[in-house]
Image (cartoon, helix red, strand yellow):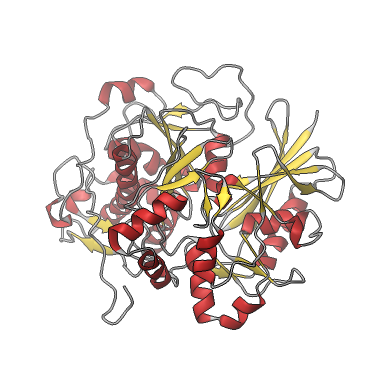
Length: 501
């Protein structure tokens, strides 16, 4: 029974699972938290990894391991391999001005956005590594001068797990490289000219980009370390996504992605042209605000997540017109790094915990539904939606999502699953090891009665009955009974006067 280990080093925690490589059976697992914040010392990730590995019973008996990690964070190393400064994470918006400057550098406006999209498949926003490099060069020139190598969190952890043998041993994979803003998924090459444009010099060492089956190093036992992947690509690989599947991941961020045989180049910047973990491509839309919208709502209402879900399901679809615009940490899609959240439609009738809970769930899902619309506008085919991530554990999310997305929604099982040789009709093959249940598509989704989640007749018989409105142009007009109230993409509060836009 050969064992393999998988590591998920996400924004909020590190998870380690050890599985039987033949059957996919979960053998053991461990977890440890990461510190909060958008700038984090990488040593904290290494400590969390060590803790999670220990809780999972160690790695001495595994035949191979690999890491999936949060993407786009900037890790700068000096010539001796020491960390220069805290890593600036994907959800840090301090480089919003740098993003605008980089677009201006290539012509500005639509021309600048198109130039970036054609070069690297994405348009700079504060999330991407290339903008963080421009910020560093401008704001911290001494740290920029010390920097001899730049890598991502997944790259650094893999390097450390293999013994940190030297900067020239840094490795990454296509999915991670495609989120930097200086590597082209279409050509498979670094764009050192764009790296130099951002950082002011291009003599910095960058990780070698491995093929999907490449080896990134070895554990101290000699077991190989795989190339790994960014968390988005890891999710697509894990659920066995194919043509017509759209993966919606609800974690710290919200991700809408699909597997494609051709690279994306969206000059609007909404769809980013990432690469996947199999050698193909992974166009995606990312929101900064996802599961933590639920965290915030639960904290405000002083309930746990089960309580929040029960409250949301007790309120009517559309929350009687109460709309929560979920831009709690600024937003990337739309690109409003200094926006704040907002609540619209507050009346005596809607001033209840249940209405606010419902509005929070619907607001988060509507932001992701805008991402789904953007994928459709780029020509994606959507046969079904696969819901993953921590937020997918919420019963309210699972029940409301089909109504908001207007699509069949499936949720893969999360624990020890067995391999199946065939992909079952209406199910989900997670790397040959899982079959998902179909989620109830009623907008009401009441846990107190009706067909249970997982009854495919509910999805096929009622799909479209409570479809999400195609972008309500104003939150105050969104009180249509029986429908989720989706805020417009122009929602959200403006930053204080004088804040950089």
